[in-house]
Image (cartoon, rainbow, N blue to C red; front, top):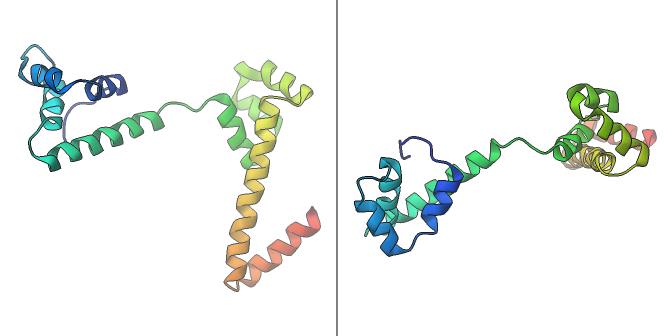
Length: 152
């Protein structure tokens, strides 16, 4: 793993968009930040392994940074649906969006549809897990499948 200070996604993208001539210029330019010069030097290395590992590392860094970006409220509400949270619990978690949540619930659109999709996904995940265990002979899973069928 490369041990250098964090670099933003925008800088990674800008570096990857450089031509080979631009990379050579940056690699030699002492006024450029050290991290940027080092990444460019590794990308333009004659050693293919170093270049490919650098690309792999950049890709991993971009994914790590993207995963740290907060989910949209729509994605969060879908997750709450998977976990069977009530609308009151969701509003308690998002008081600033309470009006939007309530209006979407009344109109059965937008956030409400994300929630119902989440509920369906949650049920499917549970059923799939129980089915997999039942196929392996788990009697408790078979019992739970029958209970879930009766509750539908």
